[in-house]
Length: 392
Image 1 (cartoon, one colour):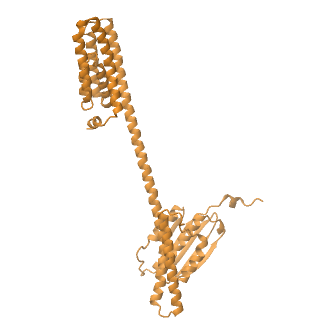
Image 2 (cartoon, one colour; image 1 turned 30 degrees about the vertical axis):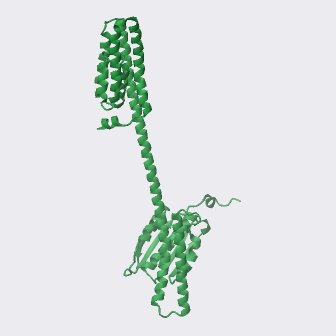
Image 3 (tube, rainbow, N blue to C red; image 1 turned 180 degrees about the vertical axis):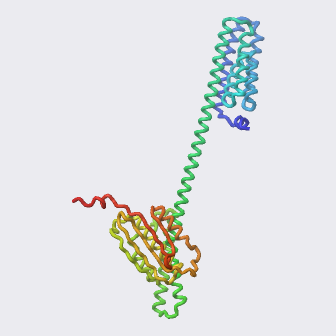
């Protein structure tokens, strides 16, 4: 089946032309020789016509060499025992056999070709020229064998290089797809962090309006304005994240950092969440910007998680660290097991854990002494300037 597919593969028209030119050149040479012989001895004309006729017949047989490669090579080899003109088609079909077939087919045809060479050389009489002709023919046959095998190796090498190039291209495409998937996951985490925070605030504010009957008209108005403001912020932040999906450079992705934490605490307190903050971070101006962004998202997700699982409870947030020691964030709230977490439960923590892992930090969460504790650490390397000091 492999050989059939190989023989049926289309050839370049230039390759076909070269093969027929390679067959015609020896035929023309031997035709000229026969012309000289006949001009000197007209009685040799019948022999010349038979010789040339067999050569033309061998040229016709070349057209089927790819369908029956070793059969055609064998047939032209047998014809070469009776015709010198057929040597051109014999060479081409034999080289083609060496290029595309195996040794079990090449060796028998090579033996028949050599025996036909010997038979043709010794047919009239054995002279000194006979041995010379046999020697030259043997060298030519060996050269054709090496020539065909060399091109076979070239073809195999080209095929392997093409296969390697295709494999490399597929790997590059897979890497591109993996990069796209990683970017989508990153945007999905970003979208979850942003929207979960806003929607949980809206839920808290709406719940206060629904169940509290003691609110004055002014308090109700303030709560409604807060809902409106958070809804507006949600739409803006959603639009920004979706803009990053569209690669819209006019929209900057939301990238709050540690400097925005005070605004975050004020925002959730306004919405009714009770938060106690213990911030002992030293040299916070030296905190790398990416680490500050991760820290903001950790606190934001922890507050969102507390609103989902322990609404109305007091949340404690402790932040500390300095260059060289790392940044640690500890957020805890009462563990209310009877409270339904709602849709998307724990997915925020999964995304947060992946974010921290990629940043080189650690995240753990567990219930301790009746409180749900989220403990996160982020690396905070000491810069060369910090370690050497100011050498004024």
